[in-house]
Image (cartoon, rainbow, N blue to C red; front, side, top):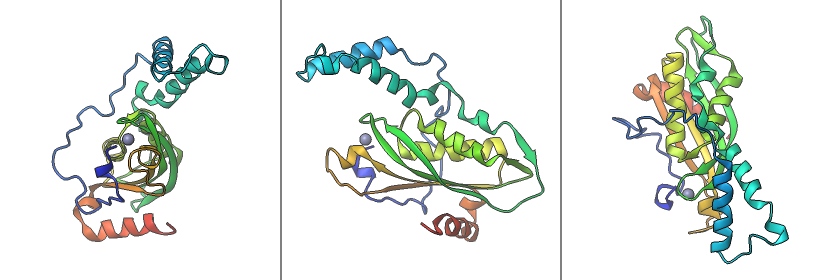
Length: 218
Ligand SMILES: [Zn+2]
């Protein structure tokens, strides 16, 4: 993420109206991760920074990093929306909220982690989903090269589309290593993003209600 987009930005009021530039942000790439190519690339980086990739402490590093990337980017292989395929028919038509879903993602601009929590609320239209499935969606959307803004929108889109929810609110707050340990080096800065769909976007009192629930205890 670029530093200009950070600085505790809270875009709850302009919430991404209009066409989105991201068309296929949840499209799976089933080919998976090529471990051998990552290993070769990590060796090359170690060499390029002036290290000796053959010294004892670094011998297993390329393979270790390759396995780590396979884990961090495991979400690329899947359609995260598949976790929302199993729904239950319920008359309940009030807000469902899951707060404080922790996630760890990788900033696609620096390949450094950003970590934080996601809060998800939706207003069902007869379909509800197991609560842990919402956490699985966050987990899988996070496990790919990401920017926090797109991650927030992807989660909101999936819930809106797959559950046909009348309203969706997703708020993510995260600390970005690319901002705390390099560049401007501002430890403690928090980036907040939100995506509102349906009634939470269109109706200010519904939005205020859901944001009140999300922010309670924050
Ligand atoms: Zn970054």
